[in-house]
Image 1 (cartoon, rainbow, N blue to C red):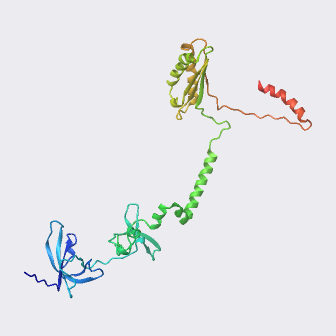
Image 2 (image 1 turned 120 degrees about the vertical axis):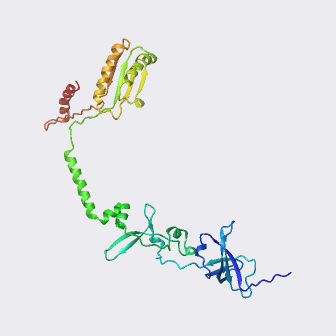
Image 3 (image 1 turned 135 degrees about the vertical axis):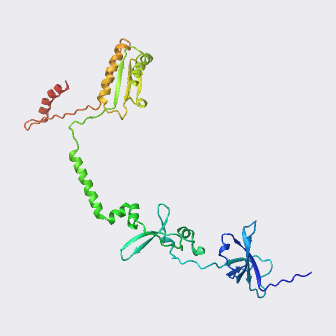
Length: 333
């Protein structure tokens, strides 16, 4: 048996996805290319459009009639087809570098209005890129060749948006505002300096102190058990003590507790006075006989310096030193 096949014209069967089948019309022009015939393409027309999709691929069968003199196209060859769709809507094509995304992710372009002398941002809707084969990866990301459409005017200008992102540019663009702000800051600083309270002897809040007690003849263990632990128990009951920074040292015949106060404690004088009263009560009620103290010392910030000098035009260095030694002895007392 023989099969007679008419290869001129050839009928090419292609599958069109469901999302694109609505754009295919009967009689539409199509361009067919075959991988086995590199560099050659054939023009044809759509003859038949399938009415049902194939269950496996979800594509619709479309037959294209292609003139095939020769014949060149043979039965069973694999082909690719590009079918011309309906006319595209008119749109503006702009370079991808002109499209800018705002912090919300919307796409914008900047439009210059000569009659106003200003540049305004316009939100646009982008379409598919044109000429993907000629674009690099960076150009595809920026969207070169996308088509924007007009949208209502936005309330902010490009100047405000750019300056909000760059305060230095804002200060250079509007120097009057920068000068006014600088003058205001200087005036506020001078006013604060003139009204700032000043004292010849400023009050210093000392937040570090030492509690010391002496127990002559006692070993370090006896001092720890009979003196140090009792002092710590009474000390840690008071509010304002910084426990993690407060530590004690016990040795033969003596003990020392380094006390650190919380930064939020305002009236430190009241705390030290109360601590002295508690230590005096502890000595009278709980500490063994023979213990000297505990003594609270926190006057580390009370430092006074006095510079005294004597001079005389008719006296040499030796004579001045002789006169200064009695004065030095009196002040040491």
